[in-house]
Length: 291
Image 1 (cartoon, rainbow, N blue to C red):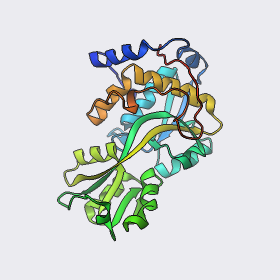
Image 2: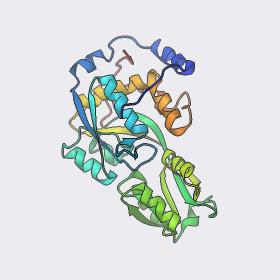
Image 3: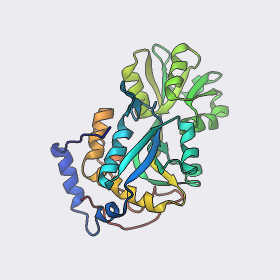
Image 4: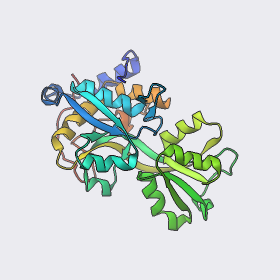
């Protein structure tokens, strides 16, 4: 399950050099020295292309590769558990997992109960409809219809918050794959999920197509228990390294087919610890560094 990452791209090396010029002071080595030998992390193994089953029974995807890259940077083994998204946060809070590697949107409600790293990907909401269905140009077109979502996800919460405004009914499914199946079978008019997930689903399934895009300004970040600032800060330093040395750009190209924009969250280290503007963020001028 470990990812093989090449640093041959001149663009990625150029980005690394540009950022490294700005870095002074302490590096990752101190964090590596004190890091645990292993972490138990969890993700939703049906959320392609972020995590999905292989023919051999393992799990693969962007977030699987990211977890292993973080482990390599920290000098720690990653024990990865795949389970339904709705059980991830309760499992984290119960101490079953050290942190979560499932794409988790930073919201005010979640930040009040969880400690987040800085963001690692920008996330917008994308609707998927059955091939040949009318394109959604106004969300009021879904008045009286069913919108299928992954139970417990940010898209589930968002769809329910806007149900009265747009008049749709929300049906939640244990996996986003099941929500897509509801669209294909006609049980739902549309599915709403993250833009990367929706784009990947459409690329693999000619029976569905992309529709309305909701630009959110939100990010995905790594959640920890509220009292675990030590691990949050340690993992965040490793994440900043992966943004700098080209690994995040490489994973984006591998799984999404695009190179991130220069100012994208995927390649932009953020000062402080946590996601600015949310509870748990700590202002800090630690130097970005990558040994």
